[in-house]
Length: 444
Image (cartoon, rainbow, N blue to C red; front, side):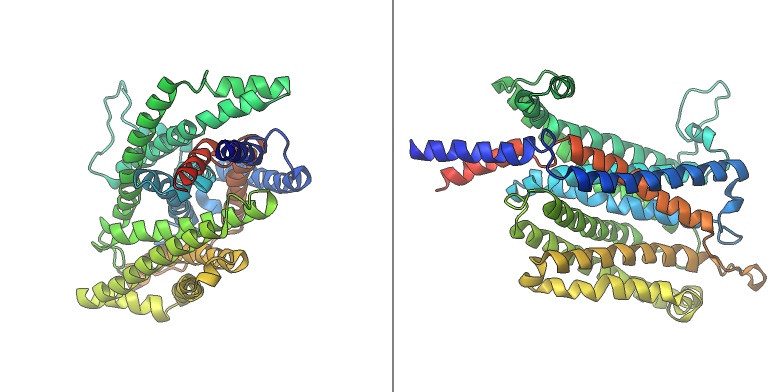
């Protein structure tokens, strides 16, 4: 009887720490401060878009031959960030790793925000963005269809599918907690809101059985998408006869780099939320340790990709070797060496368990990796384009003011919906955490 009472007390504790957060938010002043800053960045984004639509992409720093600039750099970077959420949630669900329960909800929300930011960049990059739907195979009276052999068309399908599956997976996982928040809410407004979004969930046995089946099937669909999306993005580069891009190592190299940057950002978000909200009993040093191990493992895979890229360049011949030499010692050598130093030097701290469990050290390593992976995207694109086939076509690239304002404003596009999620929805899976508590109690 005592064990049953203790188990019920643990359930109530989980409900108070997770489900009651949006109902009685404990950090209102700090949230409003962050949300005001995010709204300022969002306003900057709108101003940058208005200027872009009014004057065209001439306001960017794109040149010939560097006609891919910050838009594609940030597109690849944001999509990479969005990969860790699906990996943490879907892959660990399939492999039955319960430590995911304290991380998966906000990691999935991070994925959705990052993919939306990434998807906006190709649309803004078009000369006539209001015709972006021409990429889709819609039924047109002109019977003009997209070129299905083009990686650009694959890009449309890959990103859209990844966004829709990730959204469905996130919503499916949060459904029981929305119903729990509905039942615990005292305000009539919260009762109506959570009652509508919980879709009539009553927690019946049939509901749980169908929920588990669909949740597992969606996870099995989502895991291959993680690999396919960034593999397809790598083909945007590898399919072209450009020195520094035409390499078969790009698909696994891009997937490892995406997971690397994604785990780094998830670590930063977990530490920030752990400090700002009363989540320390749920996001424990063990979770930070596992995130540190994942960041270290994917970082070593990315480092191996760097090594193979150098080997391929030396093996391939004169043009590839010249591009490699330019990356190491040329005009943009700062981007290459900055990526190497920021990605892999602080990463070595994560070999020690004490460092992995330290929030400050893990946050600093995650921030270093996020900046380093952005520099890698910059290096990868610019150093392969600014020296064209003819010396007369050489041209340097430098982002303009509006490039930077659009990038900074995209932080508002990311933060505003994420902060709304933190404020009004359960940020941790209470139902799965209760299940974990029950299993631990059965194990003694």
